Length: 374
Image 1: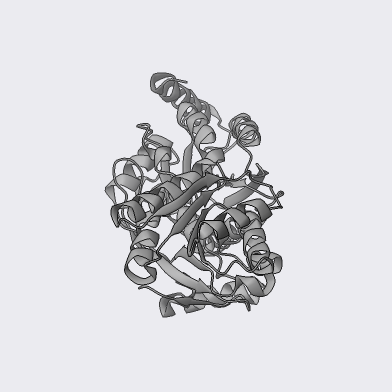
Image 2 (image 1 turned 135 degrees about the vertical axis):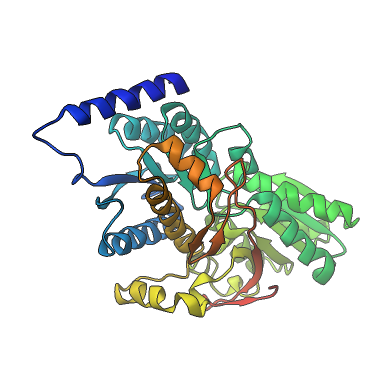
């Protein structure tokens, strides 16, 4: 659908509303699709997104909603699979929903985003970090999290300045997100002239890494960076410990959740990960944290607060424009700043945050973590 066709469709919709003398749409809820993994190996991240977005919707509705209308969440499961994400995006189009929080995995978000842009649907992802997502000139695609080209250098800087390994291995899961952030880390190590003995991909879903671990032992690797998600990282940690391979391990926010310990056990102790700031530890968010805990929910997940912020930005932009016109709302998002539990957010022309910080944490086997940077 071209922009001209999109505008014509909006005009026809407005005319239909104006002509409905006995029925008002004003009371109908504004639906927001929550698109991400409800099932599959990284469903935990979908839970984080759902938790944050639903809390924002609940609190906004309690405060009176948006322009006299309530918000309503509609959940869609893409299992973090690109083909399923395309099917979900088309279902959202067919369901007539104009706003999306999601998707989550970068490889799924990108093809879905192309559909949303074409169909005039506004999307804010709280989790997809691949830079390519916002490099296509789209006008309706935003994110409330930083990029791999911010996260990778943050990890690389810490390794170069603090760990200073004699030899390193950089691994990834051959997917857009994992390979992207791993490549950024490798670039930092290369620039510092730290030898990268291995730069290799593993297949997502693999469970036996014994041959790879033996290879790293032969190469005298002291530090391993893995770009990917916790199922493979957990297996790498556990099998490395079982085989006497004692390198330090590090990964992106995709490895930083409590299921890493469920997989790796005691071997999770000392893993390093880059994560967004612990927004749940900010005293300014104490009331919001209590609201989560009163529901028996854990607000410490990496994507909980960015998902809350995604909904809030949408709602605030609707209020600014007094509209649900996605083009007007997108322009309002680019032209204003938004006070959210993740800080004051401002967006550039591509739809990325102007500022975002990733913190390096050390993970502990009791599922706590210690900040190593600020």
